[in-house]
Length: 557
Image 1 (spheres, rainbow, N blue to C red):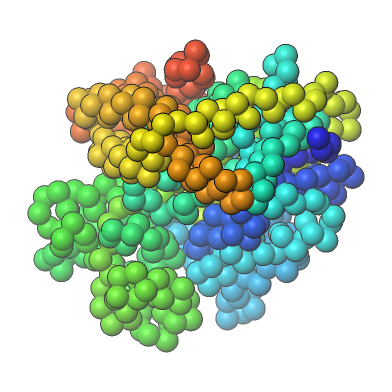
Image 2: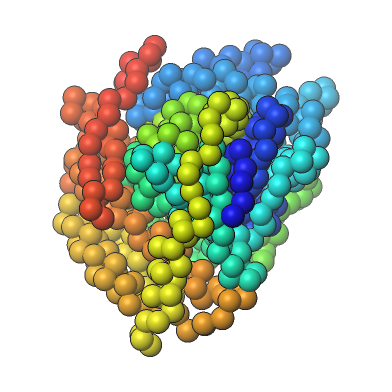
């Protein structure tokens, strides 16, 4: 058994920012990650990070309003205000730590335009901003002395009398299972993208953190709000960053028509992501697509500019679609990208379970609401990662370890033994694929009552199939067969909460678009859907949206 003051699950930007803050507060900090930290999915955040810096005439209140409007007025305005006020400090802090942001011609930090924002306030490192920040933070936590449990898999949170006091985790390299006590646990395990197929997310994004917290008594919120990114490569789901549209890319249909001029005459291709995804899907559904796609065209920017500002996504298009975007348009389509919902947490990361905090995509602080603005995700990870680390460290200084011993691992050991003893049957792969395609079909860009009901029925059958899944590999060393099977259980639980929440919301708002109920209904639905586990099934309750200075209005771009 191991002991730490603060244990952080996940080594992406939120987890490592929390680790740095907690370490600087003077407590013993450890991070557990199922991959090497710089392989965390924060790597995939390409476009940049938003902040309103006053030296260029911007104001955090303008950033806040754009975020609130982008959320389709489902974001809690008090939380959004905090994120936007603290944004500039985080960008400057990252630069001081060593992040080499692009500069403008005057030598100042450079910005690019991003969707849903009236001003260019997205700071960037070419088109690999997340990767750059991830490497910088990893260097910082190593320097600060945080311990990293690399390639360990968290099996469960340990709960005693309603408090979280540690985790049970497995060393992927050896199969060894260990109990880790902690005075505070910060969940920063990222999103659930692979619940859908295809997805822009890495294969590691399986909803582990949301499921673990949910089973430990924490609530999930806004789970129906699943963002489809407008520009992903057909088939593979590989992301073509919003940076392309930020630099001036056009969206074209089969008639070579720049169709966003019709749908969003002011913002055009840089309307909010939910709007652009719906417009693309409408063009495709109405027969103006090309083999189920529309086209992203950057040729007018010139090859030199593309090579300087969009080099990585140019390579991605060549590698995965055999298209050189400097010479021809890229076929793209909407693809599942981000979960706005997650573990319900306040602005200090506190969940409903004492001792358990949450930050990053795994959490729902309610700064994204019905739709996240591009480049607010990196900001979310840094602001609330830091705040969670500070407050978890403070808790650790003022509390003691719960009475926990190695017996806490018994249920997880028994579950793994049960899985390994299952008779030969179907493996996780087919079940996982069927779940992903069902989620895309019934809970994708457009939703409808009878289709969602059918999707819920499919999920019920998938859950039954998963009970008898066959794990062919019986060994201990790097048993990825077992690992993927355990992840499947997490994914199914997340899928259930998405489906039940989506079915319950009888309106259209943000990423939740119902063809049978196309209008937003502020009178009845200006509220969050909160899901808790009750006897293994999702139990729904509601929470009012926090309104401060901005009254909900019709959202137009």
